[in-house]
Image (cartoon, rainbow, N blue to C red; front, side, top):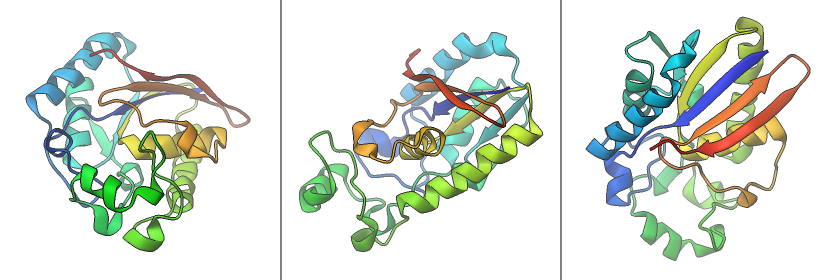
Amino acid sequence: MTTLYIVRHGQSEANKAGILQGNKIDTPLTAKGRSQADAVYQQLQKLDFDKVYASPLLRAAQTAHIIANNATTVYDSRLKEYDYGEWDGLLVEDVHQKYARFFNSQHNLLPGSDKISHGETFEEVTQRLEEFFSELVVKHADEKLLIVSHGFTIKLMLNAILGIKNLVNLNEPSNAGVTKIELTPETRTLLYFNQEFS
């Protein structure tokens, strides 16, 4: 069994400024974000991870560095944040107002926005994550892995693992929220979602 501890990065400068931050926007952690990552480290340090994987974007890389206590990290571009296309870098509030038809009352992104934003589709990201998980099961049987990624990408991970399909039923995890998943060649099991330690 492969056990994944999936962590959303801590608060970034763009998060703090209310900027929509996909895979084209690359800002560092704030002091609060570093503190959030350290709180996760305090809770998970006894786990002795066999391997650490992270998105190469700075906010995720810095979070992984803190939680993994300087352990070697493999940066995998499949863990990057969803690409919001032309919306990347805009104020979140402005996007919600101007493109309200693509969000529900909880501000969860609805399918089809890629036709306007020219970003990725949910299916494209889900497919790359399914490939990533399939590789992990083969490479890391009976190992504990730390995975550091991004809010919307983690939602799409759950789509890949659980086949949620209707993603508006799931909010993005909080900054530094932890999700635990167990994988075998035959099964994929969610043990908990968005556990907050900070």
